[in-house]
Length: 113
Length: 113
Image 1 (cartoon, helix red, strand yellow):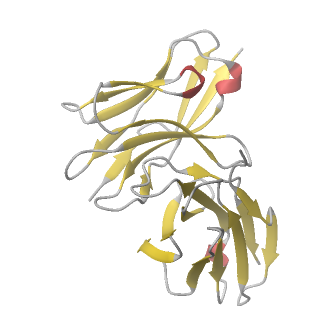
Image 2 (cartoon, rainbow over the protein chains, first blue to last red):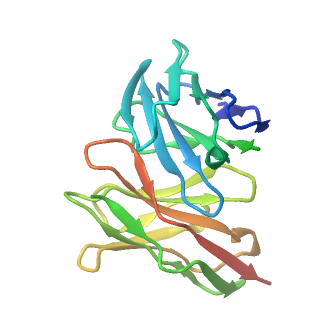
């Protein structure tokens, strides 16, 4: 059974640019959630996708957007990058809803300069 | 609003001694509580959850947690600590009527040989 995978591992972008992060959910999982973990803090919920539709959103601006594909993989897109967007971005998948157990990927470390 | 608090930034314990990592919660309705562990440059690994039932929850790697409704606590415990248990531990609560996880600020556990 393959776990949650994320790509790329690390990414460096310049302020104002756009970035796309990718996540492959664990086999059999149709729910994907994205979290942002700033240095020294706990993860903050960005949004969740369930069966290709957004199903809940945290306190993040609209320049954070996402997609879920028919195979349940997912993308996180961030437009107009700001320095404060520098963080570890974590994807978590769950075998449906309610998502009592969420299984996290290793994360993508985004640095905005 | 749902929230958790981890009052200790760091816990130090000698190998072989019992360990406790503290977490208190504030919720509306029934609490759905979780513990996750994060190793350096890694994503979060699920340890255990409390949804309902027995107040003592057993999880992965020999960890357990005690749910105490009167004290609104959900402390993580292990009878005998290992050096390899050294990591960052997060307590989390499920959001009200959502799947989002609300994390504490984390507690760094250091186990000394």
